[in-house]
Length: 348
Image (cartoon, rainbow, N blue to C red; front, top):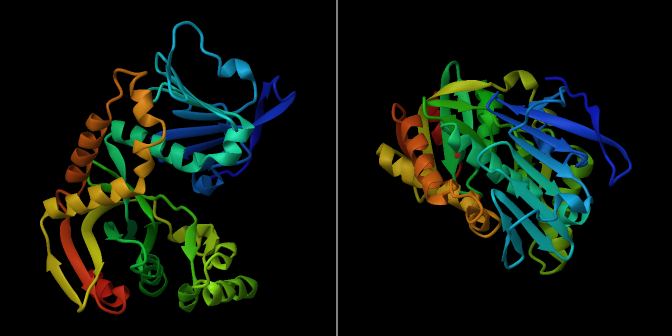
């Protein structure tokens, strides 16, 4: 994909030319950010050069008050102003407005709001909702492929999902689709979602970590048990996937062949589980991943849009996952020391 940017708009509140950056997520979700300082640069795998597209989600950074003033009748719900298919959140540090979550969504944000609030996760959840309406979904899992077969690796944080994924690619010549979040559809396909990955000292056995970064990680590891002080040091390295893997190993799409539910255990084992058991795990992991769904803006927005029903969205998500893995072999993998060894045995 082309990584150029294109200036196409002007906002009088800033008095200067704006920059539009656009992302095309597998031709299903088009995301555009306007003058937002590349808030979503983590999506650069999907970056395109055409800024003038009819986006599914548009994020606009502006201090122009007219965007946030209610027009006509409205309802106050705490810090929220609710109108027809529109929600404004008013905080001391800034404002945010969402329009038309189920159609062409626009999100207006002030500079102060952008500096304080976690917009990346908010927009990620909106993309998630958009995917579900298109018979697709995220699942909290890594994904690799071998030839045409895709393998879903679901595991709780800290169980070695990342190092296992990297070893399968480096040592077994598998292809990479995702490390943390994978896109699936109801036809049994899995799609690439290559976000930046989080590496620690343990990954240096398979990834060449720069010396300065390694020294910082070692320092962080040394003081991570010291209260208060440890907060100033991050013992993880967040890095773009293209700094770790060649782009050629990233596969656009594969057919879901196996779903592996990976767990730390007292002994190594592989056992088949039902698709329903796998669905339950994937749904609960998804709920954990997007916990902000219940405390951000989606519940108050439901008062503004009669067609927006969170219960229906969750039910639709379950249906998508059920259809996606209906033909897949589902296995529970228990490991005592290293997940890679037993997963490799299962997949090769």
